[in-house]
Length: 126
Image (cartoon, rainbow, N blue to C red):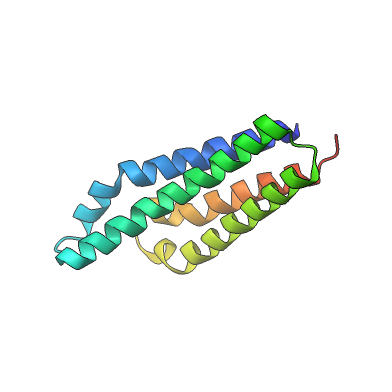
């Protein structure tokens, strides 16, 4: 059950991260007109959030696959990843989620859901 929760969370957050990267151009178009510097910064931030989400997903999945989910290092990775998701949810809640487009409003609940999956998995016993 623990591995299912971990892989489910990782799959979900990796998908959301890839969508961030894929949709960067469309997001930029929604902010036009932009100065050159603002375009570069917005592009960087949008892609980096996607890369961060993919990294967290890959880290959790790799630790689970390669080291197993029932050890203290794996537990540390899962809890640290959950904390990262909670921090990102908090930042999103007070920034992007206050914007009108629905996808921005989905970030906090998606990040929080993944954090819960990671935390519950980290507390399950074999």
